[in-house]
Image 1 (cartoon, rainbow, N blue to C red):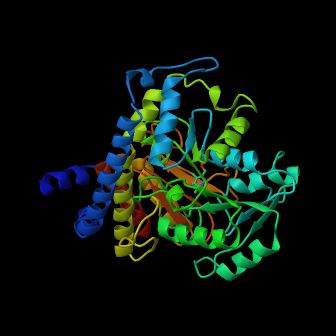
Image 2 (cartoon, rainbow, N blue to C red):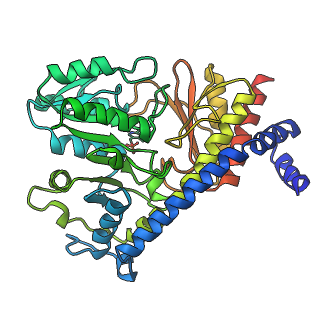
Length: 428
Ligand SMILES: *Cc1c(COP(=O)(O)O)cnc(C)c1O
């Protein structure tokens, strides 16, 4: 069997050495893969049983147009998300265009002039800088323009700086909303597990009970057995072209949380008074339901790919965040490559291993919302979908590549092999 597989790999330009390296790494990950499978099985049943409980039926898979009043599928889908994420209510919409948009809706729905947004666990995702107003030149319409303040406490030694957080909370009575980002995103920190976020939330609540706590849940869905609302978050948001769309949602974002907050978000998403009642789904309900149904297994495939990539690159002597044997809370695998040509080679290899656009050569370019040039490998069915095999990284020290996704594990393994081969070709 392995001889046959090796032949297939060799025909595609992978050397015997690289094939051997990847397979040896895979063989050593039995324990990690077993844990991923167990979590995936439990999460799959969580979603399946919730679908049964909210009575997903054939009518849910139909389409609405125009205003989208009484879209039974949309309403049931939102009940389903709420149930799975243990929230009171949810918005799951194609009109939420991406993760940044979902987060922006939450921020601008809740905050009022004079309020302060506080990030106790370091700076949020790059694309939110313009939204909050943290850049030298902010796009028109930032929160800052509406006189909404911002405070942050950076991490200290990769951990929460509890004394500083306490001080900031006590000294700034206008803090209204707390934002915590579960996944590291483009940062070289560790991602926050549900347990760690739970400790932080408990600490914050002890000091100030009245605060609203939101978690940017992008890339985190179904990686662990529980989700942020279960450990005390009031509202979470994420993108449907990451984990919860299961690779099938062609667009969309979700927000889940307490009823009053979701109503505020619905009024910001559409209009005060119209709220969640409008919003046609244009035939996307089927992909949303099916993608959410698939998500626990698709997420597990992506996780196995992340762990395999970590192990392979550790064998090659690179620093990985997180290491292959560590607990996971998101699907992102960072590898510190140290040199721009390695980063470019890695991304070219992943692109060459993709199902779509495998002959495209990715090049670094400036991206809206990001501070340096970024190189992205994405041969995806859905543009920019990062639950699909993808790799990207900003062209700056320490030339970290952020690798994620892989709808099927065997295709992701092939893509990783291509990246190692591309790197080997540069090294020689
Ligand atoms: C992807 C991501 C976002 C933004 O999502 P987009 O869909 O790219 O706008 C925000 N936060 C984190 C942690 C992310 O991974």
